[in-house]
Amino acid sequence: MEKRDIRLDFLRGTALMMIFADHIPKSLLSLATLQSFAFADAAELFFFLSGFVAAMVYGRTLDKRGFLAGAARTWRRAWDIYAAQMVLLFFFVAEICAIASVLPDAGYFQYFRVNAFITHTETTILQALMLRFQPTYLDILPVYTVFFGLLPFILVALKRGPWLVLLASFLLYVGTQLYGWNFSTHPNGEGWFFDPFAWQFVMVMGAAFGSGQMDRYKPLLFSRPVLMGSGVIAVVAASMQFTNNVHALFAAVPTLFLIDVPIEKTMLEPARLVSFFAVAILAARYMPSAARMARFAVVRALACCGRHSLAIFCMGTLLAIPGHVMWLEAGQSLTLQLIFNVAGVLLLIATAWLLDWIKEGQRAIVPMPELERVPA
Image (tube, rainbow, N blue to C red; front, side, top):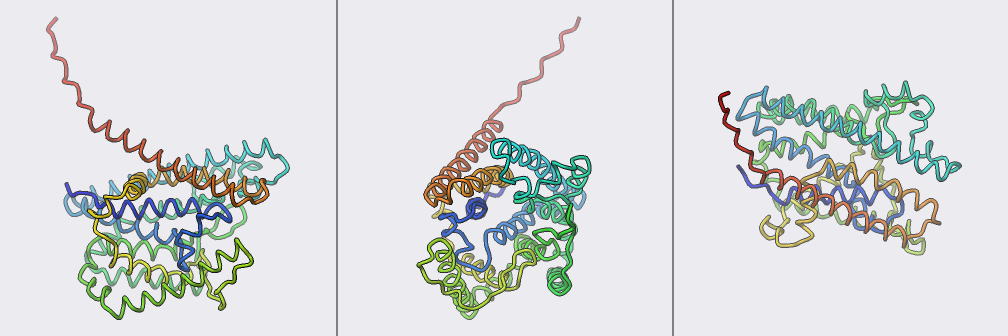
């Protein structure tokens, strides 16, 4: 069995911590997240890594055991993600109800987009099962469910012709930019916050690299012109985004965001893609080896979170709600937000360690031998 690369788990764990920090408004920790250094944010990183790891893991099963075994394992993961979305929705609504019982006039049902669930529960449940009801923060996992449902076919197609798959994925992305294709949500008929027709391109790109089909092109990606171009893009985006985010927290600090760069998230604007891939190329080229990174405790802690990405994502989503409410109710105190953010990150890491401990304990259990049958 191949040893797991700690760098992938570290990046996934880092993306999860960034998503948690970015979900809380005006968070000081957000100054250290990807959205402060690029036109993209942790969502692009999370989507890309999910495609990469999924292709690497499930593609291996497809190669060794055939399409049906590989597809069954992939669809099992799709079911896990779908089930997580349903359980997360239940706890999410319960959490908002608990907050509304203490702050009945704050309008949090509407604020977190669960009003339809409260007022028309019988119809909204069905829409939720169809992934059309997506409250605030519950809009990522539906895209993952769709992607993992299609992943076996994508992996087969990648092995036969990776460039054709990437071309088809890119044309779908371009068509979305031109014509606004999207699925609709309940109850207002708005599009999915993460437009699956656009965001699939990041996942398919990740799957293409994770499947190993693009390894031959690494020398080109790491060539001097590409690295220099990526560096220029990364520096320009970082200088604009970081000063803009600092300005949003401290108005006295000037911003270098002097030109209008369209970075709308739902449609995954091209500037976001270009910025993300520039950072990704630089990270892939200059990231230290797995052995060197494994020496640091913070790397091991974040990698532990990455190994339990689905559970940590769900818990981080539920933790973000009180942080968001606290920001609105406590006078928008940056100090309280920082304390809550740090406590939340530590709690998520502790949860990941606990899940790791439970998993290791299960592996250590030796099955009891069957008792011999004694004749009557």
